[in-house]
Length: 155
Image (cartoon, rainbow, N blue to C red; front, side):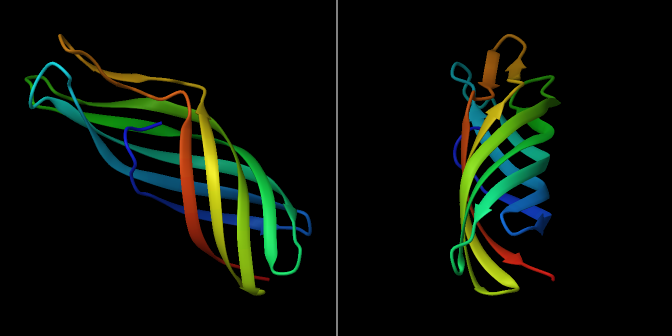
């Protein structure tokens, strides 16, 4: 939902079953910059944090795990404007439904490497605007994320 491609870090904890998994996660998306179209030197840095709950159905052939996950996340997108008098920091609520497949490889029982493309569909589409300049940025209707991670498993 944020402008441009940018790094995001996440920390998650979860439970694994034979054909399912559930997770709680916290994420932070590093700031991206947007520029005002009609005002040179005016723009905003926009970042985001979220808390998420996710559930997955999982197939486990050998050391590969294939999953289909769905979830919900809530948090804030925070815009910090610059370049004009009265520039301010504005948080707007973020609420989205997420859906995506996962692929993980577990060479050891306690360790896995995973890849997960994910689609996020915001229920709230806020906008960041500046008085006299109009909208600097509006949250996109759909967001695509690509995740790569390491997983430690405690049994």
